[in-house]
Amino acid sequence: MANFQDSGAGAYTVGMWMVWMVAASAAVFPQGAVVKVRSAEAVAARMNGRQARLFAQEEGGRLGLLGIPAQERPGEYRLEYLDAAGRVLKTDTLTVRDARFPRQNVVLGKQQVELKASTVEAEKVGAFLANVSEKRLWKEVFGAPVPGCMNSPYGVARMHNGKLTGSYHGGADQRSAAGKPIYAPVDGVVKIAEMFELRGGTVGLDHGQGLETIYMHMSGFAVKEGAVVKQGDVIGYVGSTGRANGPHLHWSVYANGVAVNPLEWVKLTPCAAPAKAAPKKGPPLARKR
Image (cartoon, rainbow, N blue to C red; front, top):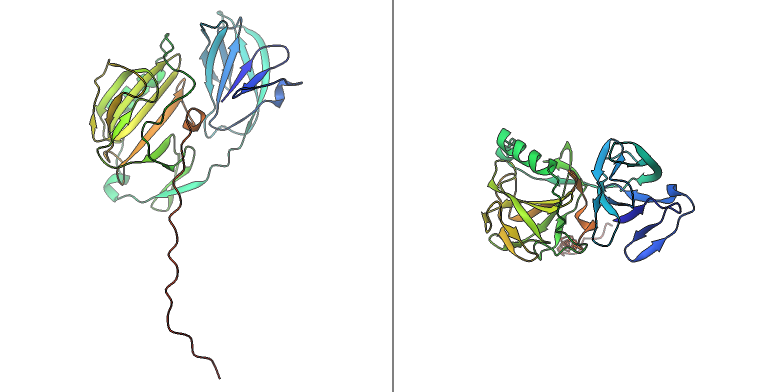
């Protein structure tokens, strides 16, 4: 994740390092990244048809979050800074690079493959992602919602039983035993706490100013809709409800409705690949004469 400011020098920061660019086109972001747009005057930013509000911050200036989808076409894009009337105040250029996400196969039963979101589920999640609240509750560093390793990263092209689905993984899966607690990674307000058909037990947290997270396949809930949670509060329990082939936590991060890479916000340790069994030793082969 990087800051992109509308200064004449085109300054941006990565972590704690400030980089001053000669040309704005030197700013390169991988698919799935979050562009943190800062401005003293603009009230919104727009790129490739997606728009984000810029909110006044306590430290001064305005800040907004523009998500780059996992399937964004690599190349150069115009970043436009807008005033309250929608007029373009200034433009910059940034480059989206191919993140080279791999493929991943998931083995599912016929009944699981055929699961679809109900109209109620689709509408409720859609409304949640479209809403943008005014108050910022989030901070830069997230905690991991469960301590388990990551066994499916963001962005992988998903295959079901060896066949490409045409979709990508919009979050991160973490390994965890059934019934283990799931913790809020950062402060937020519970907007969804419901058992859905496709997603299973689902909690949606609004962290304010366009940042939201969703947690899926839960076996049960520890919160109700409308509750305010703090970082580290238990929000539910790991399960395998909905389209899941075993207990785990799938969770997603959204910047103004765009699913972005959770690794932009928290460090997760990938699960080690299972070790290959050593070949069994058999009797020595007879020599050919």
